[in-house]
Image 1 (tube, one colour):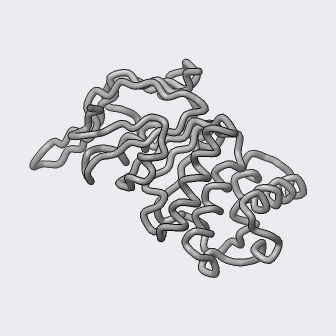
Image 2 (cartoon, rainbow, N blue to C red):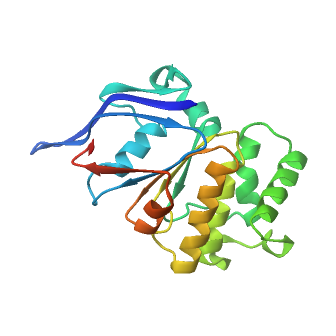
Image 3 (cartoon, helix red, strand yellow):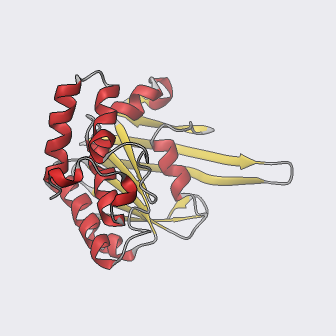
Length: 220
């Protein structure tokens, strides 16, 4: 089922010395239930493309459609909160919030009561094998793999059905990388998410259903 449609998506960076076309007329259809890996060298446009899909910016030309609706005409704050969610290499957890508060945060933004948000957050934390001893810990008290697991389940706390991950294993050791890759793969195959990962990690590409190579802003 078509979830995201990219039509001639182009984005460029300009300064007084040069213009760099970061994304160059990309056309592609992403579907639910599929685990995608976008691979390519640094500077090829992977992160910029994820930012455009996430609604953090709009293409300079071309269009991105979510469920048939042009993202440019949607409330992009609501789109980022409820439709598409992002996981980063450096986790991006709130350092002064506990694990439980981090996971509750996006739920509270949607207007869910504190009681219901806490219950859902607890269920999510337990779903990745972390019990009550973790609830009141702060991010600096967790390992890199634990922080990334919390970052992913925080992303799942909303109703978003598209998960974007930018180098999610970049700061992890081999075993934690395997755990995160397995988690993302299961979210696509068992929970029917559309999972799109930008990565240098070929072990992710090995597990992906579809691997897309990006070069000079283009899919090749």
